[in-house]
Amino acid sequence: MPDDGLTALATRLQTACLARGLTVATAESCTGGLVAEAITRVPGSSGYFVGGVVSYADAVKAELLGVPGAVLAAHGAVSEPVARAMAEGARARLGVDLAVSVTGIAGPDGGTPEKPVGLTFIGLASATATTARRYVWSFDRDGDRRASAEAALGALLEAAERPDTLGSRP
Image (cartoon, rainbow, N blue to C red; front, side, top):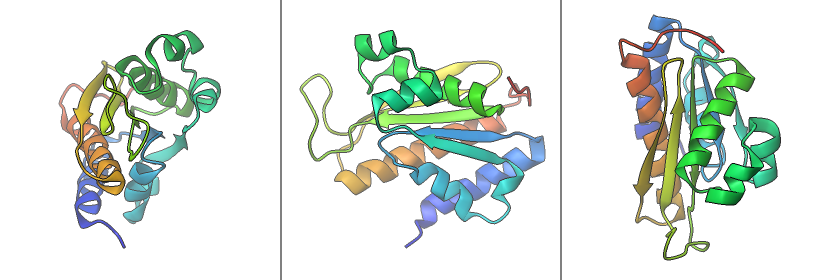
């Protein structure tokens, strides 16, 4: 069943991107394509959404998104540097104005004291900057994935509405 909150965010994102002529791509790990699904749920999304990569395995992050192996080895897949590299790789390889990335531990297993279940990083790459935000969700697996998708859509929307975000493709 569609998530009305995600659909509402995706609708607002579409309006902002179409008004400014911005294109978007996604690079997702723990959300498994949920961000792209929310975007494409809205009719007309082909007017700004180019595509996405679901990069669950580190090898896919490296091969398809260009995340350096040294960065993965030094920081692990669930880290700020990897989130940044995933977003930059999606932006460059898909030739878009804005790219968002999601990498995290949705649970219920896989957490450690240093990287607990729910830890998620959202990366955002634009022509002017690349950023990453850290979150720690405390829901079940579905809730963590949904919260991550909502944060990713929010990051895209924030960037699409920023006056300094220009349509400058790589």
